[in-house]
Image (spheres, rainbow, N blue to C red):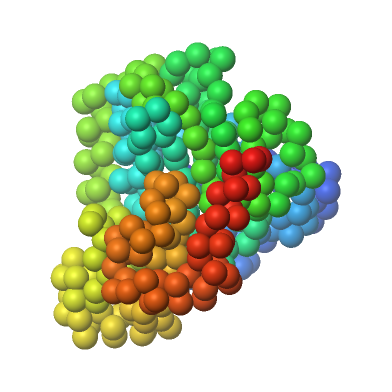
Length: 334
């Protein structure tokens, strides 16, 4: 499901980086197996670049070059949307079809809207993974906004959940807005008025065709994705949230016992995938949707405030209200 051009872009980055003197192995030399070989090889190339040059800014290089209409059906789908809002909504609906690790979440407010990037598929994602993903998403998003509205358009603010990189001046040069590092969530904020902007390449019939094709392809190939991945995707995308194994089993057309067996076969349990999804949704509720502590606990299905506080301390290492207050103060004063 990953276009060959993605690999060519990464290989070009490797060839043009003087800090990288070795050549990556081919997927055959790596003896990759399974239905998701393309995803595994893409991940390998990203890890290869950062392992040889931890300060690589390849996320920008990648994000600024995946803008051509002829890249793949996914980019044709989002660029043929009618408006920026339709484009973002389609991205959220379709992104899991690619089997990639980040999970985008859009929140629309009266004056300010945002796109957050969650990482629910791993216990703890590496900082370079988050950095690469944010650079790709936000550089591409800025290009989309500027081509749709005006080259003078800039985001309101960008939050990044990783340390300030050595080439942070490139962030400022590109985005020209407030940038907060070591934030509790990765998120780009922009005026809600941008959502109604019409995309220059919009084509409603083609957009609908690509959307239908994406879901058709996923329906045919979704079993190539791990069952764990599909389970977490459902937990992240359900509305309203319902964290029960019976609900997840029904949504995946399987018995509750079958659900536990399928997850166990991949070395995990319902409790583990539930924790991963809830961890990321906690950050989204508190820092993107600006819900209070009590509302967040309720919407995520915790029976008591005590159980939510215990979960929060396990996941984030501190008293929840103190943590939220300190993070909110940091964001307000940044």
